[in-house]
Image 1: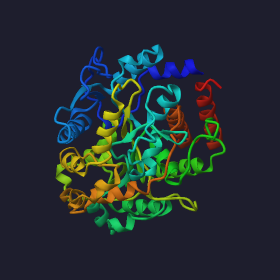
Image 2 (image 1 turned 45 degrees about the vertical axis):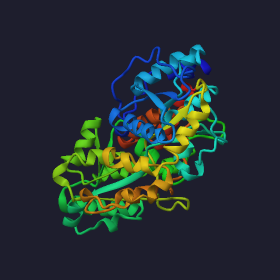
Image 3 (image 1 turned 90 degrees about the horizontal axis):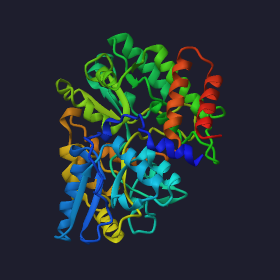
Length: 436
């Protein structure tokens, strides 16, 4: 099994997230961490100059107020290139080529920690205030109750709707707040009949949306022993059923590519989107629609006692590698910036839209400022509150394989396939990929 996992880690994961921009690649050879010649310098690997790297640069400036000699050697490495580099380095066992700190996609975090236990430093007893981060976000970088990452950007689920289209159909944003999926379907059918607009769209090649619904009901897709739990998973079946009904009624449409998906709600005939809050950056590209969007929470699973209106999708966290020669400095830097500086988040939010998952940042006045694009709604404060209510969702080692298999199952089910049979096929596929 170890060989299979190692092989998978050396391959590029096909998983596009608008929130996690790829950035250009960089030859990281010779740009390792563990700098012994300068006790004030840390090497960082990250992608996206305008988002993640920009945030690191601002964090560096803040920490320099305490330590004027402090310096970050930030190396831009795309997520795809990073996976290739890590696959080579980790499988060889030569960890000396690793940086001190690196950014890791939340959905891949557990996979790396579980496959390579000596990769990331255990930060559980480091003094970083993990209790000030939402449980749902923390879970992505936790294994066996231990913390291996410092959460960064906010992938909290939001529902955004065109308020002008809702008004045309006789509804307001309040009518779509704190509702369940049955109520959503009823309103969606009415909006479609009266305006010709669907109320939701999703990418056709992913099961992310289905899994977001499962998470919102405090569900999961893995058994305690790590095996896939699809066939006997009633929450997953309910979520699949809702997905099919949304599509069958026309209340939901699908985009066959990422660009097509974005176009459905920025220039097409779709009046809403439900995804990680980073999707708002795409919503805002439709400048002519400024003032005609509103943000609220997602619908809940009906007739499920544990169901909530909150979930998450996407995001990344910062990890300290075991190659870091000055772990005390790395931990202190992260603790006093990404896990301790309201000033940092006040700086990066207006420029990049980087919403914090660190709860105290939500107390900043920047988060309470009304946003004209959303009709004067203080959406950042709202989303920060949503984050504190998001249930934990364990991605597991084979999350990508599960996502792909369930996407195929969803497509087949929507084309008339038997739910139980398609879920069994998906479960068998993932089990095979796991070497079982």
